[in-house]
Length: 98
Image (tube, rainbow, N blue to C red; front, side):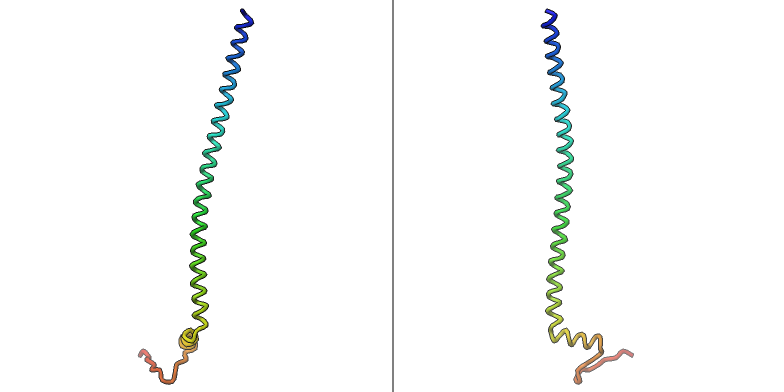
């Protein structure tokens, strides 16, 4: 009888050990899942930020392309000549503040 009791006790110890190992692994995996979830959320936020930066740069690119076209027009040349060089057409009327 003693041998059988010892066998049952060892069997219970083995089950307890396996249960403890499974619980420890479940706890470790839970922590890892939480960490991965947090990291995923950070990546999602970073991706959104990068998308906004990309859109801002695309808008800026369009503005620069429009400005490039404008700088090749007669209007730009006249505006620059008037504002930076003070040039005017002969028939322009000039108003001066007193």
